[in-house]
Image (tube, rainbow, N blue to C red; front, side, top):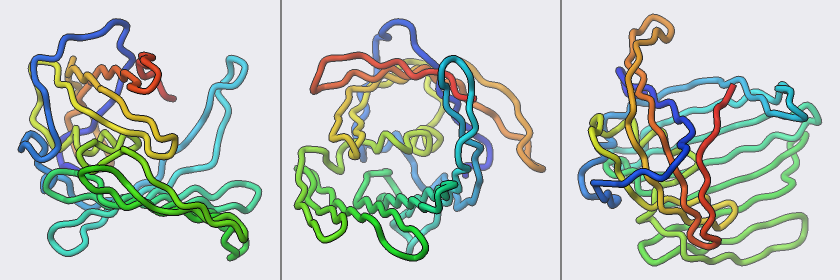
Length: 219
C-alpha cells in the first residue's frame, strides 16, 4: 500500500458541509502512490450484541502494465465455498473499469458475474448454474468503487476540509453522494514500518432511497 498512510473510517453523527467537490480524474487522487501489496484480514460480525469470528479475507493489489490496477479479495468459507472478487481500476485516477465475482466449490464454479463500466453506465452478465442474466445499470466509471474506497483516499493528500464525491456499491446497484472529513492522525507500526494512520469520518447519502448511512466501527 502507500508507504506512509493507512485509512481508518469512523462513524459520522451528523452531516458535514463539503467545501471541496471531487470528481474522478480531477487530480486529487494520485493512484501511482499506491504500491502492490498482499494482506490477510481477520473478519468478524456483530450478532445479537456479540462479535463472532468469520472467514479470513485475503486481499492483494497488483499493477498490470503501467496503467491498470487489479484489486482482489478472496474468502474461503468453512463450507468449502471460495468467493473471489476482482476490481480493475485505471491506476492514475482509481476509476473502476471492470468487476468480476465468482464462487467455486471443490473446483466447480457455482456462480460468476462480470460488469464493464464506462462513463455512462455499465453492462455485463451473471451466471448461476445453467441460467445467464444480462446486466446493465447507471453505475459508471465516474464513481469511486465504494467497496474499496480506502485505497483512493490513501492516494490523496490529507484534506483540511470535507470532500464530497460520488461512489457506488455495484453489487446492490446503489449510488451515493459521499462526504468525507479528515479528522485526525495517529502513528502506528505495521510489521517493520512506521506509518501514519488517517482518521476519516464518512457519510453516505443513498441517492435511490434518500437514506443516510454513517459508517460504524469495525473490530
